[in-house]
Image (spheres, rainbow, N blue to C red):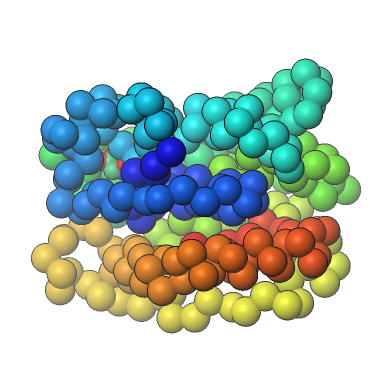
Length: 271
Ligand SMILES: N[C@@H](CCC(=O)N[C@@H](CS)C(=O)NCC(=O)O)C(=O)O
């Protein structure tokens, strides 16, 4: 098994999923900025032309983050991140659909059609005129989600699932591109900051130096400096941590498996 990896929230979500499962797999870095993902040989393997992808030992390549999650869940059922019964799986899948169809897809397109415009113009049809509406839709649907999270530890309820990982990766990305969660959404904020569980984050080092202004100095007008910095920091952290980081996380999880919260996840995984 081999992961085609890059910066960006979807590959990050897969790395988190693997860490939660305690599964290690070799990673091949694909140059997303250089559009390696949009041409052969990558598109021969994954015609969707996006990341991540999972190559199986028999050479087949699975694209689409959720399809990869579902495959990994079947191969490595413990701990369950979809569910261990038909009912649990159905619950997690219905929340995954809601989260993606109502929130994360609009958030990503809002970015692609605005701050990411020049990066995405050569890749797909961009609709700059839709960006503001998409970003507003994200906020509308976060406002819809907010009361539904009241009194809940995780999106599904008592169980941490792929829906938490998917939403967390998107909202943390959103923070870096001007699509933060509105402060008045107390339940979403509490969930995103791990405050849903008192003390969940007390042991977690804060990531620093994530914000800044690299401006257009890297020759990518339209891609905000904050995004570039975020991507650079993410890559550096990933490269620096590598397998050692994964082992530390796995050891930490074993000692204290209860203390895992979404933001905690991002920080503890250094991803
Ligand atoms: N529907 C895909 C979306 C994946 C996606 O948007 N990946 C981004 C990285 S986070 C990507 O490949 N962007 C570069 C591009 O689209 O060319 C999935 O769920 O896996």
